[in-house]
Amino acid sequence: MNVNELDGRVAIVTGAAGGLGRGIAARFAAEGARVVIADQNIPHGKELAESLGQAAVFRAVDVADPEDVRGLVEFTVASFGGLHVMVNNAGVSGTMHRSFLDDDLADFAAVMGVNVLGVLAGTTHAARHMATAGGGSIINVSSIGGLTAGRSVITYRASKAAVIHASRSAAIALAEYDIRVNCIAPGNITTPLLASSVAGQADADATVALTRRKMAAMRPLRREGTAADVAEAALYLASDRSAYVTGIVVPVDGGSAAGSTVNFDRLARLGAVQVPPA
Image (cartoon, rainbow, N blue to C red):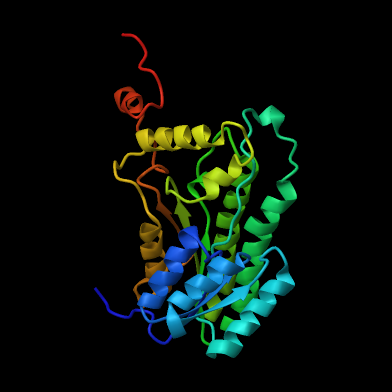
């Protein structure tokens, strides 16, 4: 394995104060990159930056505001002298309703603002710098929810599907500048995102637990996915190992995007369903 794969490079990771972004930022710093921790969560973002020492700085940003994102890129270039890797990871989930008929679409603008506009703004402003600086790697975090259909959080799924299509299009448009644009589609990985979709509901904890049991029972690979798994995929796409790779989507989901394994005995053992009578 290569050591210090990102030595001398500068990266931005949005949504880096926690969850997947935190894992990506820490992995990049461990590989020699200087990293800007970009997030709205100021206490957690500053704490992470301080823990990474001189390799990282924190910048508060609202990715749904393109001017804020432009300022983030300018801050990064001024602080570290350049920008080689942009990870548009910040994302929010929509509200999980028991039925699509109950969805009033009240969160549509907020979800699309962060998940789609935020990714496009990050891609655009990073690319404008990279186009004049020899190229770079842009990594957009989608979800298996953008690859596979489902009955819940449909606005969220639509936003993540948009990220994939926009990233593929940007990969074509930016290839002449030696800018690579790729996606990661995580799935079935424990982060606070699922809990946020049922926040405030009376049975929120039970719903999260049941949903996780169902996902675990239907996932082809038995072991749980982690933020470290996603960070490894991001490292590959950021490094020279993927120098001839652009416009792809990398599912990091235990095989879920390939198809679910519906095993009633396994579902029952995890308490997700009752086994039907023979």
